[in-house]
Amino acid sequence: DAGVTQSPTHLIKTRGQHVTLRCSPISGHKSVSWYQQVLGQGPQFIFQYYEKEERGRGNFPDRFSARQFPNYSSELNVNALLLGDSALYLCASSLIGPSGNTIYFGEGSWLTVV
Amino acid sequence: DAKTTQPNSMESNEEEPVHLPCNHSTISGTDYIHWYRQLPSQGPEYVIHGLTSNVNNRMASLAIAEDRKSSTLILHRATLRDAAVYYCILSRSGGSNYKLTFGKGTLLTVNP
Image 1: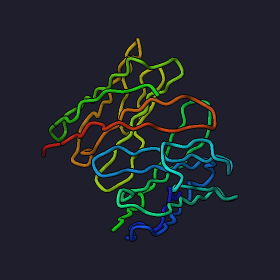
Image 2: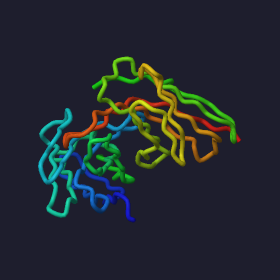
Image 3: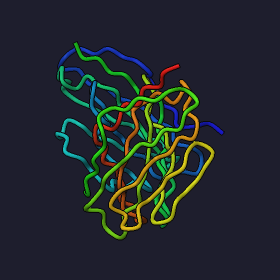
Image 4: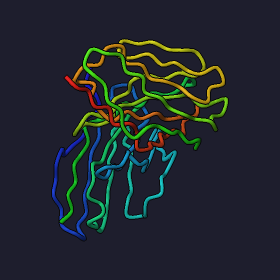
């Protein structure tokens, strides 16, 4: 079975530009989350979507937005890029259940803002 | 979110057992204990999780203290491929609103 897939794997953008990152969850997983990981830190939660609705938002500015499509894939959009947005962006999918959800991460999209 | 405390780094020798500790003194009754690891240049990988009882899977064992204020991830025979950052995370069970709060984790070095 395919795991969580993300695209692109690497990209370079200029300050002020916009970026769209894409994620396909594991088949059957209806929840998708996005995390940002800057060098030397643990991943930080950005968004969680379940059944196409936003269910959680981390402490990120409004320049960050996301959506989930009917097939449960997801996009993360970042507007007006800043140098500080350079990071590894991780997508994760999970089944939602009562017994301690397990999240499965993709390999991430490396974003460099210059 | 309840907080976890882990050592910044640990070192082990190949083929020896490794015990990675985690303190979570403010854990609540509905918090599950999760362990993830992250190899260099990869996304985090699920290792194991549990609530009250000790848990075993093909990757590791999780030993949970009786008062649940601490836990230990046990790698029975460390290999070079186990060198990674290990994160101990608490998460609430159930519901559709779900996130993981990562700390800095423990950097495990495995010596050949």
